[in-house]
Length: 58
Image 1 (tube, rainbow, N blue to C red):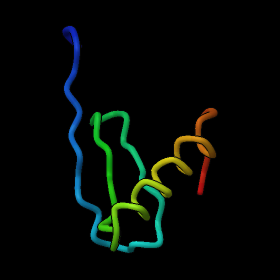
Image 2: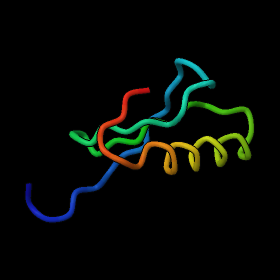
Image 3: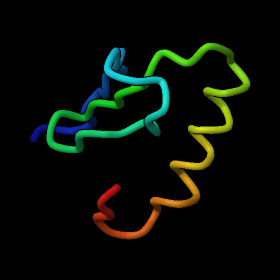
C-alpha cells in the first residue's frame, strides 16, 4: 500500500434490517437501503458503538 487509501460506500440491497458493515480489505462500507435517514443514522451509530472492539460476528 502506498499512502492514504480511499474508501468506497456500497449499496446493500439484501435487507433493511441489517446493520451497516465494512470490508477492511477493500476499504468498503456497505450500507443497507433504509426507509428513512433517521433509521440510517440510528443503525449506523449502533454499529459504531456496539461493534467497535475487535472482529465481532453478528
